[in-house]
Length: 136
Image 1 (tube, rainbow, N blue to C red):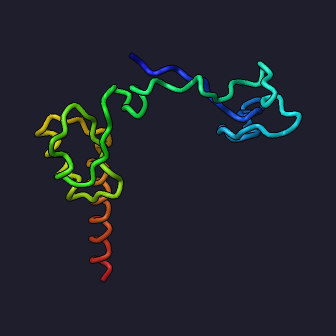
Image 2: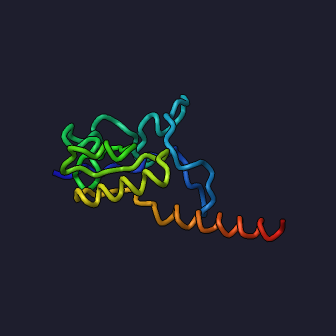
Image 3: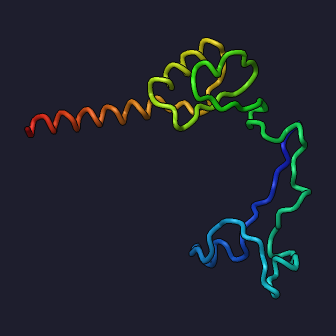
């Protein structure tokens, strides 16, 4: 069973004329007395309502169809099966590598695999340190 497709719920006039953005593309409830979106003019676009809600079995799942679990430390991985792992953004490099190694050994998929980005940042910091040492 797949999730429903939903319309893009924007504020009226989002996007504007000829490519210029008049109003940001985000949802705000229409409240004006003459607002055409509030009175549900067909040309004004879709508005969110309960009919767009997905089945309870599908809500909160990762697009792959598996349950997504937020992990803060390697011990949180114990006993997990048939889930998708997301490492919390506050986890540092050392714990992140430990979580990645353990998840790989357990055969779990990690959604936000960002170790390469962290290593690139560290390399640039080390280069900066070398430059500072030369100046002194």
